[in-house]
Image 1 (cartoon, rainbow, N blue to C red):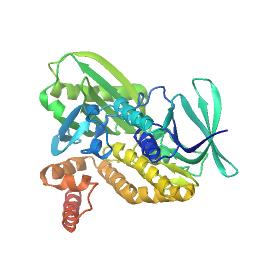
Image 2 (cartoon, helix red, strand yellow):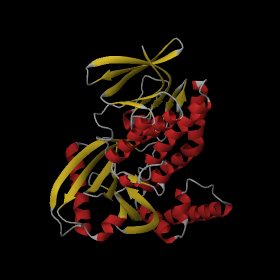
Image 3 (tube, rainbow, N blue to C red):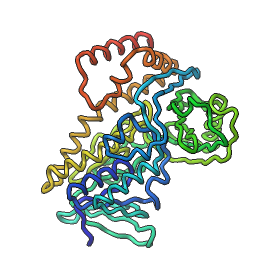
Image 4 (spheres, rainbow, N blue to C red):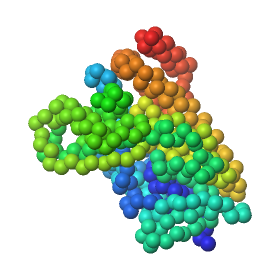
Amino acid sequence: METAELVIVGCGPAGATAAREAARAGIHSLVLEKDAIVGEKRVCAAGLRPGFCNEFELPREIVHFDTPRLALFDASGEEHVLTFGPGHTSTREELDGTIARLAREEGAEIRTHALFRELTRDGGRLVLEYADLHEGARKRIAARAIFFAQGATAVLDRSPLRYAQWRDGLMTTLQYRIYLDRPAIPVTYETLEMHYYVGRSGRQIVGWMFPKKDHLAIGLGVIGKMEGTALRTELDALTERIAARLYPHCGVTRQKVEGHLLYMGAPRPVLSADAVMLGGTAAGLVDATNGEGIYEAAMSGRLAAEALLAHRDDPPRAARRYANGVKRRFVGKLRRRLKLMHFLEREPQRFGILFEQLATTPGLPQILHGETRPRTLRDRAILYAQMLKFLYKAA
């Protein structure tokens, strides 16, 4: 039977980062990716937070635009502008593909057309079975440690990592790539747009517009399932509103449609079992207020590699270290963001109250979004004061 020290399922930001940093440390790493091309089928606006490329040593060539404006549109359609960053835009093909290329250069092996099927234990070994879609054959690998990072498709029902509420957080999404015959108005390429409103169906919608070099990514998502025609109607209505503001003078030369499941629920309560770890969206590491999960995914890959390197002779201990590190770093914050989203959705006008407060309070967005520095007493005092102010107005 084939063997590997670390087998990674999924080659998104979590899996590819884990492979790159583990291979750099001398850990024999093998990645199984079900798609033919890494990143090809990811429905994602691919917004990167400020400093992402520097933090994960990625070339600036993958950045399409530096976007200093974040425009939040509330339930009435009013725009609230925050200045930050700047953030960056890319595509998942470029982001995932670049991290995968860098992982290969460090010595990791990446196999495409490889669909995970089952995980079992054979004596002292973890045995992963996958379907080689290119050859049409089932294959098995014995691994010392496994990192699951296959995104929202990571149901894992027959596993100690099973999470009964996983499907409650799945989001149905649809996105257009809009190709124009001339540039949109200039502010388009400086802005990340997020839209929060109740759709024609009566359900809460989260929409977005992110600019790319050759197209605009316009999409939306809704928790749970929505019939395809209704979802397309919702997206067409959002696209028309955005078009009227940003590119009324342009013709559309091409429009590509993409659809997929994303996740915007609670993080999984169990992130490791035995020598198995869960990362990225597969672990539920997604901010429910805005859908951001790329940073958390890449960082979970780094934490997995670091934990395995620290306890290379004891993979179960490495997995426990990894889970504890991810929980300390992300889980509490993401659960609070989910509670906030539910609170806002119960009374949609609350979105406008919050967005106005964010837009008019200097420094507040930076404190909320800060990851690299600990919060000072002054930061905490500002947060608590602003929280009380928001709750008073929301009530």
